[in-house]
Image (cartoon, rainbow, N blue to C red; front, side, top):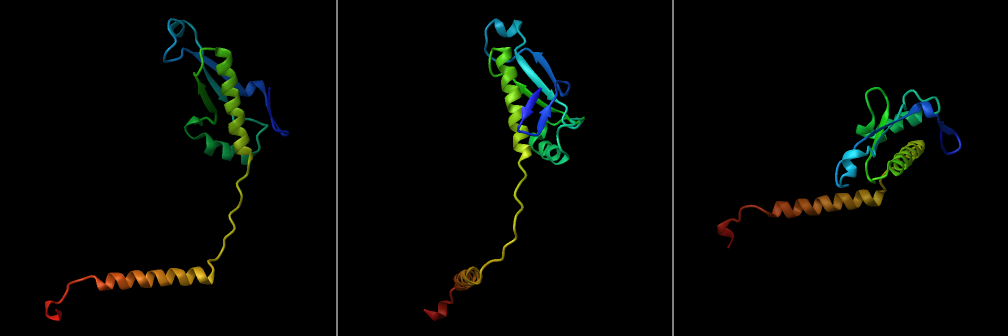
Length: 141
């Protein structure tokens, strides 16, 4: 059972761990021991997550969110299976904690009068510079 914050509890039935062989260096050990972990969290079916957190979690998870509403986290950083399990659980907790934070609503503001004037002055100056470009009349020399 994972406890996230004060209000969210993830039960063991919601988590599934699958162990496979890691890629990369590791000598003979890499061919014998299944140290990589795929942690699968059934987020869409989780009774502990509020709907708002689920929707933010789906957005944050990106490719890790499956079609059936699960978050899959793969870790193969260390040669230790237990350490990889811990890292996967830590990443899941961090992801859910980020999803728990509601984004601040943007308050629409109006530009100040002086900023409008600066913008118009800059546009006029730029237009003047561009108007001075062009063909030079040879008779004016």
